[in-house]
Length: 96
Image (cartoon, rainbow, N blue to C red; front, side, top):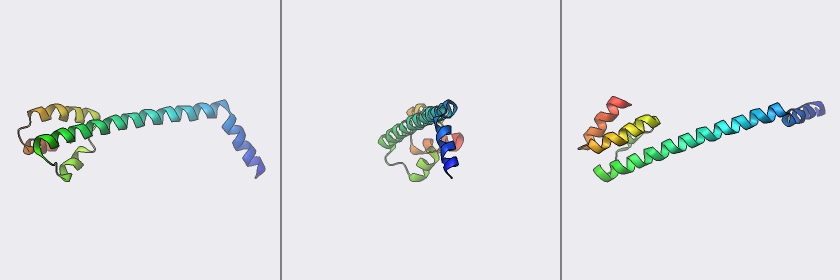
């Protein structure tokens, strides 16, 4: 058992292990930042839609949640031309 503990300690102190750990942390930070930006964009679009058409039903919000960043940006532009909530429904049917 003590040999295993020593091996684990040696491994953790190795340059290769530290490199892999650091790369994983950087990748995690990038993914977290990307997801945060995506969520922020979606929240802004939902706020804009709510201001324009009133409360957006959960069913429509649920369809917006899995949208990619590009799709959210496309929706942000498209909503400028929406005349009613039915335009949102149509857009979601065609783009999600």
